[in-house]
Structure formats: C-alpha cells, structure tokens
Length: 382
Image (cartoon, one colour):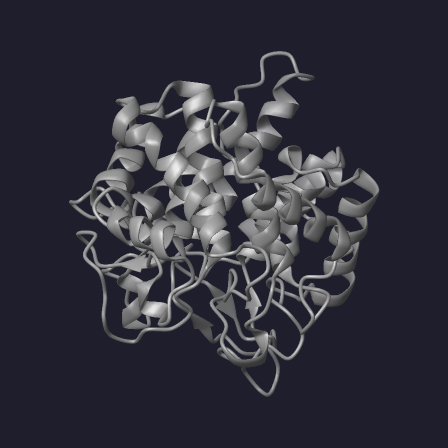
C-alpha cells in the first residue's frame, strides 16, 4: 500500500503492523523508531527492553506466535543471556556504586551495550515487565527452549531485583527521569509485582519473601500515586493494561487512576506524561503522547467499558501524521503541526492490541464478524 493511497492521518491495523516491521533489525531486535525514519532523535534507533516487550505483545494479540518466538529469542540471546553477568555481579554484590553497573535498559541494533548518552540506567519497570512478559509467554506458549538458560533467566531477574533492593531504592522509571523525578515509581513497583506473580505461576522456585512482601506493601501504600514527585502520570495506566489482571489492586482503585489520568492529562492529540513534563515541550507546555490514547483504550477495555475503549481506539487512529504514522508525541497546540520521533513503534503496537481486543469482543456478539479486521474511524462525540 502506497502512502499516497491512504487517507491523510488515518491509521489501520495492517498499516500499524507494517510500521513495527520497519523497526525490526536483522538481529531480530526492535528499535524504538524505525532507523529509516526522517523524524527521529538518533538515539531512538536504539533497542529498549521495555519497547521490545510492548512490541511483542502486538504479535501475541495478532496470533503471530512465530514472530513472537523470534522476538523473544532475539531478546534472550542478544541481550538478557549475553549480558547476564551484570545480573550475576549484582546478585553477588548488591547495589552498585555506579549506575553503569546495573543491567542496561537500552542497547545497540545487535544487542551491544551503549556507552554514550547514558542516563536513567536503573529502570526497575523494564525488568519487571520483562519478567512478566517472559513468564506470560512461557505459561501460554511454552516459549522457552530449555530450563538451564532460558527458564533460569526468570530466576536471575527475581534474584537481581531482590539484591538491588527493589522497591526501596529510587529508580528512573518508565520515562527514564533523573533529578527530582528519580524516585520510587508506582508503575515500576506494579511491573515488578506483576512479574513476581507470573514467575511464581510458571514455577520459579525462589522468590525471596522480603522482595514479594515489600513490593506488594509498597504497591498498596502508594495509594494510586505515581511518586512523591507527582501523583498523576500516564504510566499509571500500565497498572490496568497490561498488568492489571496480575496485580492485587481493586477495580475501584484502577478506575480512579484511569479517570484521574483522563481528567488531568488528556489532550487533543494524545496524553501528557505528567504536568510540568519538560521533554519536547512546545510553546511552554508538555507534548501529548499518542501512546496514551492506546493505553486509555486498553484501560477502559480492561474495566469492561467497551464503548469508551472503542472511542479511544478511533481517536488514536485519527492522530497519525499525513503519511499515517503515529509519532511519539504532538505539540500540545492543535494549530501546530510539530511532532516528534515518528513512527513510534510502541504506539503502533498499542494500536494493534487495542484494535484486535475490541474486534475480538465485537466478534463474540456479532455473527460472522472477523477477528483482526481493520477498524474504520467514525465520528464520535467526546
């Protein structure tokens, strides 16, 4: 399908699949933004553990388990197993003196470590998400090739998180922040809590009681606040999807968080990460992240609010660039056409999952409906 054949700004399921395919390197790893993008901060050609898990969730939603397996094996062989010695050292020695000694969250196209432009090297959410995702795919598809390396990496991740004293030491969180925003993040605690739940379910034998107890207590005591720095954050939506079903959070608390994000952070073309976010600020205000619309769609879907989920999926489909790419973010001012880092494969992955999940629900109630078909945007009121 040629760009000129598309309706300007429209995004459909097949197109989103093509965008995340652009992100796959010959190594099998996935970049944050396709390396051939014309709108990219060069560092976004890197491979993030977090982005990879979300991208692979799109293949799971599509039922493309072969592509899912390929992505898991690339992540294991080129990142987690290759650099497992960093986990081994922390398991032996505990919290490092220098952040570079943590397991890195970001890599080169072949899985090599990156030693330039270093920031935010402690990202507990990424490791919790990896633990959760790998255990999930082992439970559902028997994804691991063997016990002594593939499966054992789950055990190492658990031990590593225990020895770096999660959740009592500040981390950089999902947005890789430094300074005053480096603190304990509820989204990181939630990712680890969900990961521990799945790890136990697939048979990881040694889950330290201290780690489990303090992670769950911190999750509950933070009372829906992302951090001491700010209460409301787009990252809170991860505690509804994809992690909500594996967390001991009541539906009332989950609903309160999504309503608060919707009320305080929703914009015209996306969701602000948090108030006073200075990254790519445009006109003195934070940018609006397209992935936030996907998270809202999936959050409401997880709460059983099908109509609201459909509305946010359609809204996400409508905020593409003229060529149909979902950028990382748009300037907050709708009169400005400025956007950043496009296409963000994470955004397209969320669009795929939301579209498939909503179509699947529609297929259960509509005779003859086909799961996985593209959804056509329609005019809806806010």
